[in-house]
Length: 352
Image 1 (cartoon, rainbow, N blue to C red):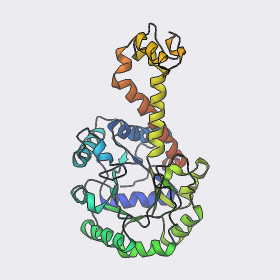
Image 2: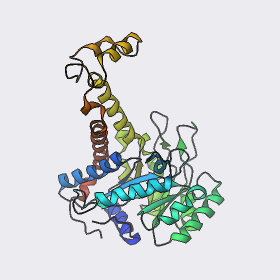
Image 3: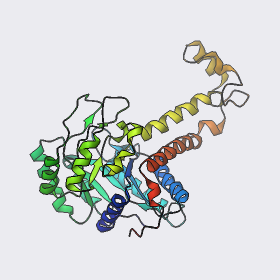
Image 4: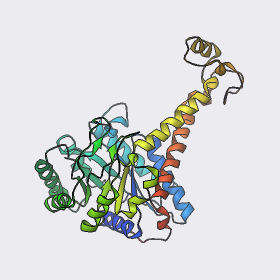
């Protein structure tokens, strides 16, 4: 199935998700392995619930100063080239010969700041299903002006998400005020965006913080304005609170930190367990002598070492590491999909 980027089809999918009480995870990526893992997760969930045509939203940032993911796709470090590479991969993954071909893939551009990313915001407006025009770093009135100006240029082309208030971040270590219902309404009316990002107490790039998701405020905004909320900083939400998000009317849930952490930690575990398959014994002896490693690594019975201790092609080339990352990220994505009620997509939905 072709990538879903028709404005009305995308709106229909969001509306249907809201009706079914499903939160759509928007999962950011900066490499092919993660991009495919996102699709593979949805593909497996689809098979498990008996519906291969379920929505999935892979996403990436462009030149976002915190983490410009399109710039990280290749060593070149060019966001425009990164976007083209991501869409090239998506088009191949959605071809008739690929197992992911029946998915409803709705790519999203995240944290695109109009003063840095307007070329990408305009050039790829017909390719993305949705974009986040993020002017939240600016004073509120300037945020509205910049966001409204972009909406006017792409109205009816692409679903636009706007950020009412800047979300707190772990780097700054400060807590921003929650978005009020009145401010959320004012922002929508004056910008014309389709989806809003209010500050609901979460935190970007959080690993362990005092961030606390405010379910009550989310419900208040939903009651007043409908199911149009996107939650950012979702990795800071406690696991026991995840199920609340769709119940609170949140229809779009952005994720990256927890996904990347799962992949990165699995990859490091794999490397540590296979030191005897990557290094010569002399190298391990040197690292033990330097106090970097413990003496256990010198045993041929250490973890996954295949005797004798020496480099083995399968373990120092990329595919095995790629597959470790892929499997961990895929499983984490699946976990979130079920947390956000993807089983409610079990019936054929006639979404397009």
